[in-house]
Amino acid sequence: MQPHAEVQVAMVPDMRVVMPVGGFMMFSAAQLHSSVPNTSGRTRFSIDFRTANVEDAIAARGATNRDSRCTGTALTDFLRVADLEHIPQNVLDMYMPGHPQAVVEA
Image (cartoon, rainbow, N blue to C red; front, side, top):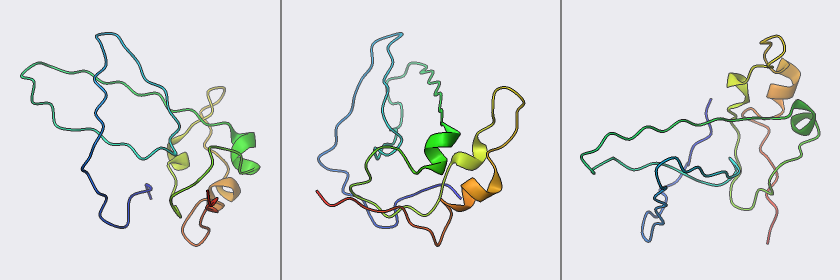
């Protein structure tokens, strides 16, 4: 199950970052983000790379969760480079429904 907003998200005002040709952006997956339709009339290529450290997942280390109570995970998609093994099920279970991630109040 992929994490997703459970309530309507205000889309205005929005912030759109337009990257130069060959540019890149790096941010935490904990940051709510989306893409918008390409209305430029030009072809747009977008490639994303996602990484996760299994030791950080086990220790629940990551970006501070300030605004959600996520109960899903994209960790099921990750494979270890060395042998293409999935993240162990007991680690995935920590992030699945019924185990919401703690919210840190500002």
